Image (tube, rainbow, N blue to C red; front, side, top):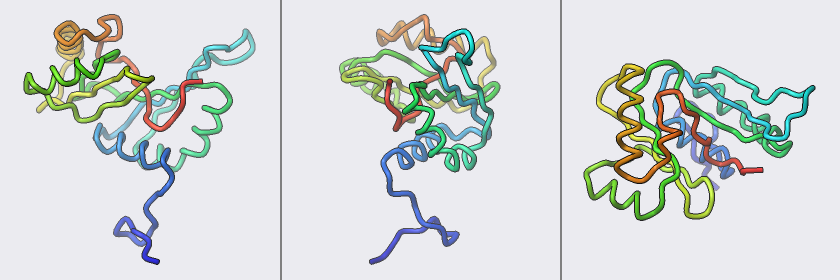
Length: 165
């Protein structure tokens, strides 16, 4: 049996979580990412959010730990670190995604966050300032019926491959 490799002799991942994580990180194409592990049930002793700043390779090496945290009840989120060239549009329907594509927008990645509910990451041709990035996200959310409250340059999106506990 032939096992696909990365070109460096290592095996390509085959489990769905690792593949989904790898595809999202590649599509977002940032040098560094902020990973947020949010515990909606955190009590006074536990941390509500565990933040991490990792490159793509570290994220992929951490899939087992992220899975463990997800099974323990944490939601797994991602966003680019610092100013970036992406806009997140949250709470979209399939019809909204079709409208987005018909209007000439081609998301770099779409994550289904729950049945029939999506997040779309749109890649711009250049790095956007915080102000321009927030304005773009708000305008896109307004135009396509997304969540304007989630439209800013620092909003986390879901990391694909993990469940919503």
